[in-house]
Image 1 (cartoon, one colour):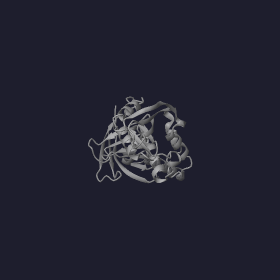
Image 2 (cartoon, rainbow, N blue to C red):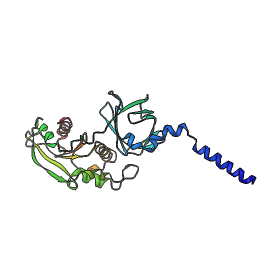
Image 3 (cartoon, rainbow, N blue to C red):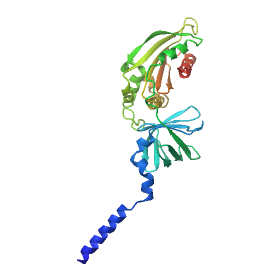
Image 4 (cartoon, rainbow, N blue to C red):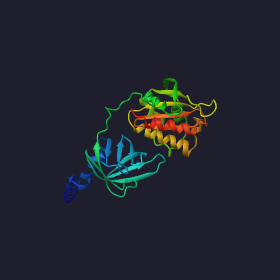
Length: 286
């Protein structure tokens, strides 16, 4: 009888301890249980400063800073920490000091010395214009000294484009530490075709040699996919030096919000002209 009473006393004590609230559990409950719902969207500092805006998708984070440089990370929530992983697999952690539907406070975020206080700006999914803007880009190229004119303009199946075919082929056998998403080409799943244009300058670079280029336009649902693909492209082209297998011509990549423009030049004789084409494509807004 005494053993039975002792057993029930221990059971009652365990139940009371298990049901007692803790400050730690209450303070972390929101972003442990619903990180996507709270983080999804765009957060801004309200000033033009380092890391002035953050845009969260379900697994990807775009960090925009005052130097017009964009960083892309895979992210996870671990209790009160924001865990970031870059394209090379390097991991860094920031402390979530506060998170609700309106404000996000981060400490030790990347190289920021002070705590960063962000306010929420709803991600404007419904307002995104998914139409092609290639025509406006081509119109702007007419104003360059080479006075580019369109030789051909059409829709192209994805697997017929240089950029998609290159991404699909060259990422197939990459080590996992280089690629966070197993199949980066699946980022194209939201689009079925791309717009392409072949252009030629009316003014020769030198005797009877005219600049030429192929421009491919891809329109995505959000800025997340182009930013990720930009990182993959630079990894293949600069770090691994394998992009030449996809395109032996000089080339450039331009991101304009949720649009991606891949530019393949007519050859190695026009490096300066390629830079001017890329600059104009990036600057010509609609």
